[in-house]
Image 1 (cartoon, helix red, strand yellow):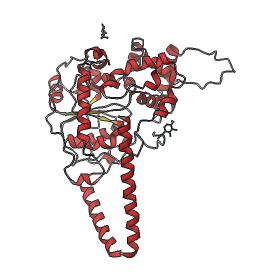
Image 2: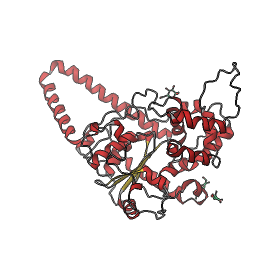
Image 3: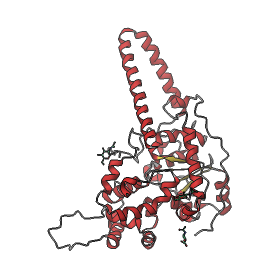
Image 4: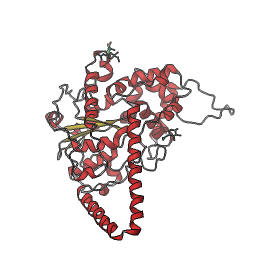
Amino acid sequence: MDINYLGEVQLAHKLRCRVDGCQLVHWEMMRRHWLLVGACGWVLLLLMVASRFINFNLHVPDDYGGKVEARTWTELSARTAKPQRTIPQPNSMSAVDVFPTIPSDWRSVEERRLDQLASVCRNASLRNLTHTSINKFVLDRIFVCDKQKILFCQTPKVGNTQWKKVLIVLNGKYSKVEDIPEDMVHDHEKNGLPRLSSLKENEIRERLDTYFKFFIVRDPFERIISAFKDKFVKNPRFEPWYKHDIAPAIIRKYRKIHRDPDDSSSHEAPGLRFEDFVRYLGDVSGQKRLNRQFGPHVIHWVTYVELCAPCDISYSMVGHHETLDRDAPYILKAAGIEHLVSYPTIPPGITLYNRTKVERYFSGIGKRDVRRLYERFQGDFNLFGYPRPDFLLD
Ligand SMILES: *[C@@H]1O[C@H](CO)[C@@H](O)[C@H](O)[C@H]1NC(C)=O
Ligand SMILES: *[C@@H]1O[C@H](CO)[C@@H](O)[C@H](O)[C@H]1NC(C)=O
Ligand SMILES: *[C@@H]1O[C@H](CO)[C@@H](O)[C@H](O)[C@H]1NC(C)=O
């Protein structure tokens, strides 16, 4: 799977080089054939005008902004009906396809993912790791776009702000993505993007049964690293509770050695260490009380199973952050909204899995703790086809 994926990336690079090469030739010709270039210019201009008609431009996703480093409700237990929408045929040539989008075999990639998900959901020995009730916590994660009949389950650290903006515009509260004030994106009282939990039980059931439903995942260990870094190391948005409330609570319970604070020979940096975080996350039963105390902030590190109930809601599509450049246009097409919106350009390489980074973060962390962490996230690894990180566990 990794190797295939690298192959695809290399191919994409080659294609890009080829395009650049064409451009050089193009400039060379320009000196000699002004008329020809003039004509090309007109064609380009027409294409640009045409594309403006079709896409409104989104800017670089702020989830990646400035990052150089790749940077109890009544339970609805019924499994919902299969999505009724047709799966897109990627080879049809529409104006949107002028831009690099969906490889022709992408449909089979998406179908294989859904097959894998269904088969792991059926596996009885993994049941505790893959199933959850469709409770209020899950319904709080799911956003509703009634105009286009779409449900979107929010999973942090995979470019979700952009999807939410897209849905806010589709719902009609704002006419352009650029018009949405940053602080409005996450204000669900005012932004016209309701949570599923705000509806009545029969309204929820109807939407779960008939709407297009999707969410985005990424490698579970990279996700944890990303959450740790963004919430406890830098924290670009001003969210003091991570460092001031949550970190000390985890340290009190999970730091192995509490150094004497008066010991001046101790040069360690203050604050939560990745090691503490891993030990907390791997303690399945012990973390429950802390998590109640942390409230909705735990969305950054609880499993995708707990966030979106992927075995209890039958999703139409699951995107992967690692292949978001192909998944995003595919999802737009499958949801039938590709003529209304486009997903912003994803900076190249930024979403790729980085094994060096994972190794670096986990170096020096005890095997026993890493194994317990893996056990906690094994459901996510298996459901979404991420390979077991043998290099950390064996
Ligand atoms: C169920 O999951 C377990 C643990 O991953 C695995 O060993 C087993 O082969 C799976 N069973 C089926 C039927 O896929
Ligand atoms: C699943 O969890 C229940 C209770 O939490 C436990 O009794 C049961 O043994 C677990 N099953 C498996 C297969 O781990
Ligand atoms: C992977 O992570 C390492 C360590 O954080 C970093 O030095 C390297 O540049 C990253 N590689 C890519 C391709 O982003």
